[in-house]
Length: 257
Image (cartoon, rainbow, N blue to C red; front, side, top):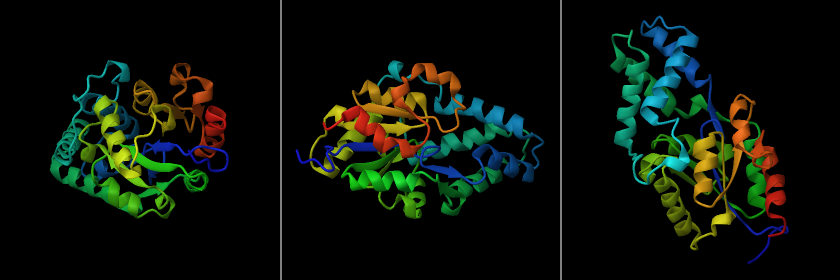
């Protein structure tokens, strides 16, 4: 196989939210601000607490990748729409017009100008593409992600964007990774070896342990050290603090292979 800059090209898959893109302001701040406009009296800390609880309840954010049964975490635009509507209902039980609040929040997160890429995204992607790697986003998101990504110049170098609603399953369901592999194989016209796929993201289960159950390589992105408790579940050489570390870390992992 042809080497580029001494390195055989790999398949590099990135999570989206909190990995390559973030909202302005932060997600829970957006929820608290919009909720207040609709009459909610919950302060920022209470909204944050309710937000976390609702995510665990509705989106299985506490799910262990090793315990997942393939095909259980189904996804589609209709499923995601219903889940987010119930999500808003769970958080803002003190709001009368929860339908109106939901519509405003849904449109806010559908609007590209309310999102931005992290400072390290463009330099990282540029290095990866110069090295000849195939780069894609693989996210638990609905179809709103596509126009958001398309509107961001820093993501112009990304080869594909895969969202759970189109894939049909959500991470860490093994079916998600299998469907992504099928899509990647079709895109590059050859099935990559498991060890030549690298997944990068901020969620320890979805983006680290989940891909590793498939035999893929994975790096856990811990930007602010706020996930300190998870560090013991991830070897140091598989943990990065910013995406600028990724190209050099690939050389450490793979050498000239």
